[in-house]
Image 1 (tube, rainbow, N blue to C red):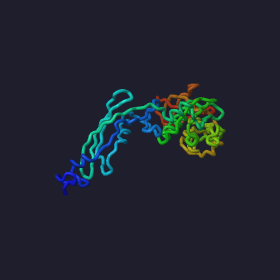
Image 2: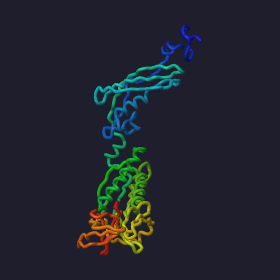
Image 3: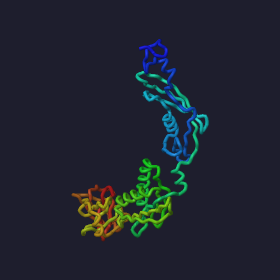
Image 4: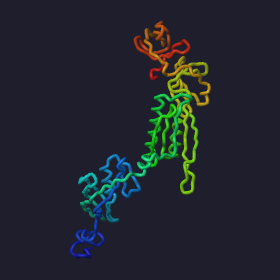
Length: 342
């Protein structure tokens, strides 16, 4: 079949030969100027100033957004596309690229070029952050005591980690502010639903109690707007503390989801205890009370160590060789060896 336009060459697509098809069809369409919006605070990028995306590599994001605006015919398929940027100044670039297209079985390699203009615009998220916007406060408090540095670090890592993870799927989730208050921590969260989920996980992880409250913050479009407070109260006992439970001394290994793992100092075995049993716990020593002692001799699961205060020889259950140091705890005149991973 001959080309119906020139009648000279064989038709290869839509009744046209290759040369006539290329002369009568625009195979790749690129705007002469492509405008992109970049937030000067977080470097997120937007094509229209409304929908924003976070970016770790600004140059790659500029290229990706620009290429998404390249248009090809409906019957064409991109086999390969590559492009690079040439900087003119900090806000103007030249995008130069090439594309290999499959058009009805006919392969064509084409080049294109466009001018990229970057416009600075603060994204809605940064605007809210700098404006101090928040919908909820997560308050973390100890049980009638100040939180320890370890508890603060653990709470900070959990809340910051969850907020960051949620923020990857929704730019509406972020931490506006954090401050120390009344021996605990306050976190100002941009999204109330996210704050509630974070508070629940924090309460589960620490085996704490959560209390929810709200207050009227104003009205919008005829509806009341509330700000929520989620108070997470930590339990009296901490990881590493020593307790008396069921007539035996134990060390708390961990607490999570309402389950406590405790270690018997006498029987040297670990057990799990449900949260309802905590009311039977009696504090006998804090983790800071643990000490070091030196093993003098060892035989059949028992070792002789030097008492850290009287320097007298004391026999305890352990699996340490002479000369090694071990962690011990003194409770009511008795000395107990702690686990190696204590």
